[in-house]
Amino acid sequence: GESVGLHLPTLSVQEGDNSIINCAYSNSASDYFIWYKQESGKGPQFIIDIRSNMDKRQGQRVTVLLNKTVKHLSLQIAATQPGDSAVYFCPGGGKLIFGQGTELSVKP
Amino acid sequence: DTGVSQNPRHKITKRGQNVTFRCDPISEHNRLYWYRQTLGQGPEFLTYFQNEAQLEKSRLLSDRFSAERPKGSFSTLEIQRTEQGDSAMYLCASSRSGVLTDTQYFGPGTRLTVL
Image (cartoon, rainbow over all chains, first blue to last red; front, side, top):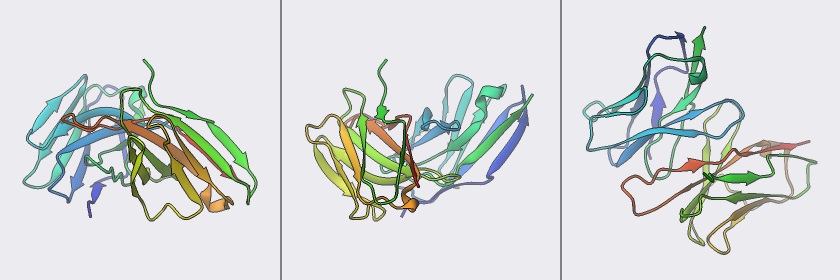
């Protein structure tokens, strides 16, 4: 079955710095990948998605990169803010398999 | 903007009681999903509907759990004879099939505490 994992369970960055959250996947059949952000006590919030025929997609302050050769995704957050503190997940499309996520902490 | 809504937001019950949660999806979404999330873990898939048809159920969905979506709009998740291990956040998500990315949008969740 599909396995999606994150390299680091926690990531701490200084406010204003850029953040990079990495993700590996094993199911090459996924048509797209989604990044979710989950704040404490809330449901996951959609950030950005990327189809498997794309290498890069940009949103507001976020960029997702997809490397199909090594089955790797990354989420880059520019000028990280305290409001970005959350757990980030990168499930593949379809029946979502979340894994533990990466907890991003932003230091003021 | 009406997103996915879930009620109640919190439920405290005693072991052995039955509980029912409700999810109202985004109105134009035909797919509806239920997930369970425990502390420190990501959401785990339980079941999903396309319109009123329940198309898939996880092994996590024991016989004490039942989900319905009778008119293809809102859905209910019932847990019978609750156990302490059922304590978790129950999340609902909805999506629309037939688009390029079947992105799921989540509700705020119902937090269940079984005493």
